[in-house]
Structure formats: C-alpha cells, structure tokens
Image 1 (tube, rainbow, N blue to C red):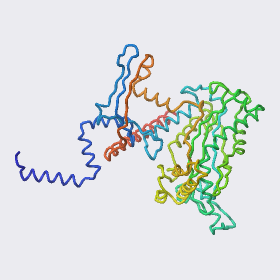
Image 2: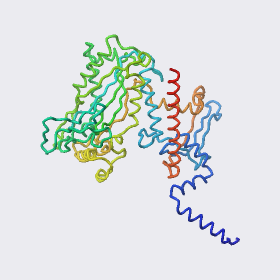
Image 3: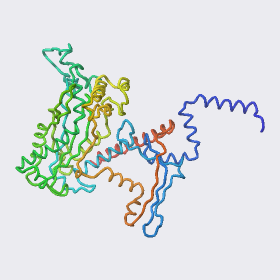
Image 4: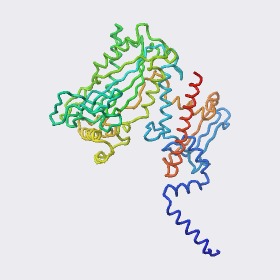
Length: 483
C-alpha cells in the first residue's frame, strides 16, 4: 500500500472535517443517494405521493390460472431496495400525513356525492329523493368567548355587568378575531361543566344511534303508520361527519335521505316529502335523550342535543344555480372535515399514557382541563365502561369521524379497489374474466422514514400540492375565459 502524500492526507482530513460539520440529516442524505437502489426507492415514494409514514412490507403475490396453472401475475420484493415495498399509511389526519389525508378526503367527497347525485353503483334517481343537510350541536356547558364574525359584534355584551359566584365577569365586550386565542375559552373555568362536557362526548355515539331510531318513529307517526311498518314504505339513509368546535365540543354534520323500501334504487312514497322529513328531524332532535351510568361523583346525566339545529334542503347541481347547499358543496364540506381532528381545535392526536402526559401536553388550559376530567372520571369504577382514559386525547369522544348507513352509497374499500385497478392499467379487472388462484405471503418489516427520507418525501408531497394548485388555477382561468 502506497503512503499518502501530504496533499492527499490534507484532503482526506479536510473531507472528514466537512462531514463532521454536517447535520445528521445531511449525512443521512449522502448515505441515501449513494445507495444502489436509490432511484427505485425514489420511484416507490413518488408512487405513494410522498406518504409521511409509509408501512414497509416484504413478500410476494402470485396469480395462477386455475385450470392451466399458468402464472398470470407475479410480484416479489426481493429485487426491491432493501427487499421491501412501501405502502401508504392511510392516516386520514392532515396533521399526521397530508398526502394520505388528501386522498382520504377525495374518497369521502365521492362517497358522499354519489349518495346525492348517483354513480358508484347508486342510481341517479336519488337526486329527486328528499335530502337534508343537518347540523346537530352539543349543548352549552358554560359561557365561552366567541369570535366576532363579519358583523364585528362584541363577544358577550352585557349592560348590567355582573359577576359569577367566583368573582369573574359574566360578559365580555371585546371583539375577538377567529384566530384570537381567547375564542372557545370559558369566561369562568370554575363555572364550566367539564364533567358534563366529557360525559356528553362519551355518550355522543349512543345519542346519535338513539336519534336515528327516534327519527324513524317520528316519520311513522307523521305518516299515520306504526314504526314496524315504516320499513315497508321507506328507508332512512345517512352519512355524518364529526367536527370539533373551538370550545372543544363535537358537533355533527349529516346528510339524511329518504329512499323507498328497496333502498336508493326505489323512490319513497309521495307522502314522504322534504318538509315532512325536516319536521321529523327537528322534533326527533328535541325529544331524544340518553342517560349516563350513575356515579356519586357525577350523578346520572341526561344527554341531549344542543338547542342550535340547522336544517337545509339539498338542491341538485343539475337542477339549481342559486342555492349554496348543493350536492357538490355538501360533499366538499364533509370531505373538508374528515381530514380534521381535535388537533385542529388546539388538541393532540396521540393517546395519553399517564396523567403527567396531560400536564405536559402542548394544549391550552381549557383543553387540559377537559383531558384531566377524562382521566379522573375514567378512574371511577362505575364509569369504567365509558373508557374515558383511553380517549382523553379526544376529550372523551370515541366515535368515528365519519359514519354512514349501509345503503347510503359506495364504500371506501370499493373506491380503493377501483383506484388500484386504474393504477395497474386495468389488469385486475381483466383477470376477473378468468378463474384464478392467488397465493400471497406478506410480513411487516418496518415503518416510517429516516431523516433524509422524510425530507425527500415532504418535498415530493409539496410538489404535488403545488401542481394541484396550478391545475386548479388553470381550470378556473379556463372557465373565466369560456364564460
């Protein structure tokens, strides 16, 4: 081995010094781009749109012709970088994975709109069925600061002033912007019913289920028939999404539709009108209630909807040009909130493991008090069934962000299958004409990115977002010039 010259030695030492000064991410980037499989890995990450937390799988899939044994399709990860394949994390939360949340919101848009316009296996006759866009809210648990809105009114004006029993003002004459940190915070934390708030959240799913039964009962009463015979005349279909308000309380936006006895393919009877459905929606909301388990600490709480209920008929895109509550507008509104979470109200989107985690959580005082109430009430044996500690990070709410009745429209699984076939060039549907046997063996081998991989994936996701914005602007400009 030849000895290094002084110049070569200085170069090597200088390179080592430069590497030492690099950040861990920069050193990881140098390692990554020198990997022999880097170009293929880049293709894989682009194919999942820069997913922020991909799941890596290893294995193979082989599809044979059942009669001849001929291999029709075969894929194996042995030739992939690291012998593995990344797949999407499919997290709906925008705060966790923007690419996957965007895709999930798009699927939600088509799922909801197909139940209003038809398509995706739903007949277009649903456009003429009675359909409502309904908002059901939580009741008040105490006065909170409100945003002034476009009219710039004061938060809670009160002529006579006055103070609560804890010595705090009962009103607020300030004008709060939507971004003001005071919005959603209680005027008096000691007066606020934190226990009632989290118990309402824990019972919201049961309240919705009871509400659906009550709605059918009120429809049957309005039609002059028994509830058991209502199914012979019509069915009630729905899709609902949960949204967190600034005060940390959930409210529901729901699309409610009346179909015939055979579902969306059959029209409802002539007496089942939009006005009749609207009256039943309001009267059922006023009557329905559920009860929490009795506890000496909280007593037995009666859970009801709040007084504020919004009901709007949905107009078809094809039949109206003036209404703002249309098929596409409602579908876009629901899709917008399906990617949101309690994190958008200032909370956190990961589970609380112990009480100290609540104390250290990066949330405001109001949300910390709600989490604390969940933890303390969750420790009571009589409230154990509500599982409040496991859902302290969601302030006690344990329902899905979006639910729908079985016959409302298509499913997420069906939409994903169509997209997978499109991305494969239609090969999956082509194989449906033949009797095949598929053998698969997959195993989990890892998840997530290294620091450099994360930066590259983030850049890919940013580029795709920018391209969507450019495409949207070009379409808008095209419409402007066309008109």
